[in-house]
Amino acid sequence: MIACGIRQNEHARLKVGIPKALPLYMRAKIREVSGVETDADHRGKGYARSLLARVCISADLDDTWLLVHVEPGDDTTDKARLLKLYLSLGFVPFQADPLLMIRQSAHARAAA
Image (cartoon, rainbow, N blue to C red; front, side, top):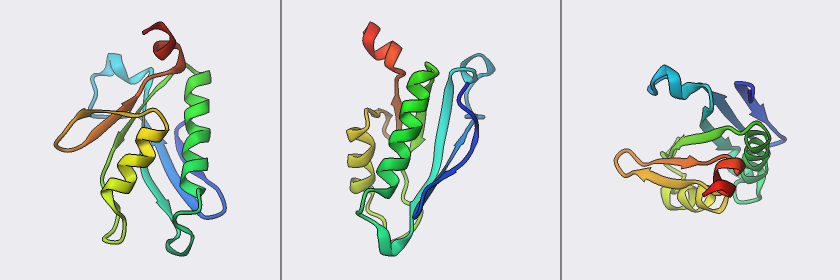
């Protein structure tokens, strides 16, 4: 199972956790990504993308789905930019308000 906890690189960080809002039977193979942030003076340089891509690879290797609530963490982050980032890494919207996105495991994508 993909480990929960903080992931970080030189200028970005995020948290992987168990989505407590989901029923118990769904929690075993779904992890929530939250708190994705990049230091203000290093935004747009790929640090968050690189970090999130590594989490996606780990999730694929573990046959785990990823869930994310698309909401800027501050007033300087553009929600449309966040949406574009998540879409580029294979996340798809499944709820509009609040905007939640899911990324199937590689195994599930291959079976579809």
